[in-house]
Image 1 (tube, rainbow, N blue to C red):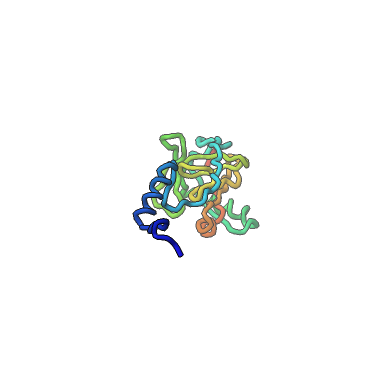
Image 2 (image 1 turned 120 degrees about the vertical axis):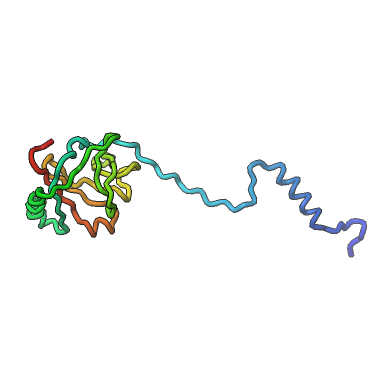
Amino acid sequence: MTSSRCARPVTNLGIASALTMFLGACTGFSLSPSAPSQPEMAVEPERPATIRSDELVGKWGLASYQNPNDRTRTEKMALAQCKQPYTIGAGTAGGVVMHLADQATPQELRLKGSASGKNYIGPEGPAGGEQDREVVSFDGRVLITRFIDKDAGTRYGNMVYVRCGPRA
């Protein structure tokens, strides 16, 4: 049996006061749920590409292939397209003016290098971004690229640009 002198009724007001005093002593306490901390992704420092934009400016015959065995034939087909060349222009900020996948209007894109030694052409952002295309090979006369985005890469395949006329 409990004595009424010793027992104190617990009220919501009493609990709230106790919690307020307790929590007031804590700094940085939040009643909102916190997300578990995730490791920060290391951002690779920007690296220059090994290809200069002025090496790409000019008129190019353009074709594409899916099967690597078709590369030689596709280069010949691209050269035949020099009657209606694709023009890679010089950008005002040092890049090249080209089309992104599925875009009707060309825009200035950057040449970007990576730690792995690969080169990319794409909009502002880290090398190898979804809208970038990887430079598969470039010898000054033939440029082969492939879009990073899997859907665009599947639809467009390996894009073969063959320089029309002498090197720039």
